[in-house]
Length: 191
Image (cartoon, rainbow, N blue to C red):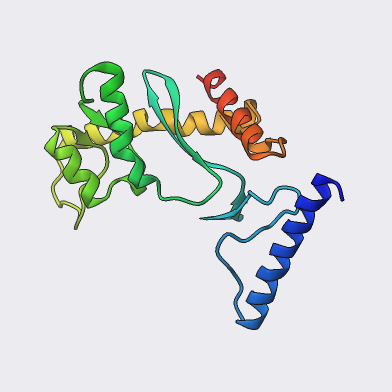
């Protein structure tokens, strides 16, 4: 039996085991579910977005410094990005020699733990504070929030540009390491 055929047989055996377990336990999902025989490393990632509740492929965490995008973490498995904020800020510190004045992040990063960590280091985290919204918000605070959102749009725009212009939405590589390479190559050209 050829090496490729043997690997495929192992994948088919695992898919059968997963399907049998789901059938016997009357479940609709299983951890590390294989969705592709030729690419068993790919996992479904539930996004919850309208029109497309799930996606397939690598999930990555990136940061944008002075218009340059840095790929901080990439994985085939689903992960919570909020755990990456400290490492991203420390990488910024290693790169520049000082902590940023502020970080402009998505809602998922605005956890109590991340807010406390940033506060200890004198870093302002963008977005509304936790808890009930304030009744009286000054013009300066509104302007600051608007400016923060504009800056944060930089990284969101880079993701969209990467999918449209640099084929991040259509990575055709079959092997995990070649897919990572294709993604990593597309990121620097995105800046």
